[in-house]
Length: 127
Image (cartoon, rainbow, N blue to C red):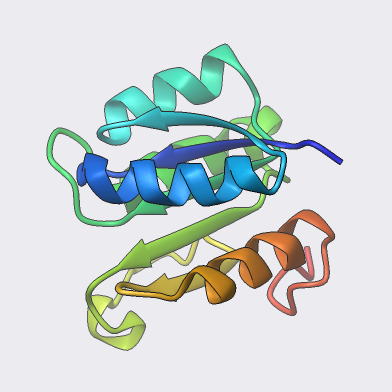
């Protein structure tokens, strides 16, 4: 079943690779280069899943995710955060994502996490 996925990452080469992997699985992908653009894309089209980097210029991923979560339309949209930093090292003061993927990651790990989030089988989706 085709789902819409928003990828927000300032590393556009990585976003393209992730997007291509997801499109190969039949999903519709939109890419945004930073949190501000990601927020705008979210408001234009409510995606089924958001995958975002946490460290970006203009607006970081955590700020974007908090704003999406504060919008009733975004309260239940699964969010997968990704970063080169270890999740514990980030010390994100408000955990606003449902899954975390540390860069670099393997395609199979990405696809498994996306499937779990879209099927609501991710253990952190206990909302």
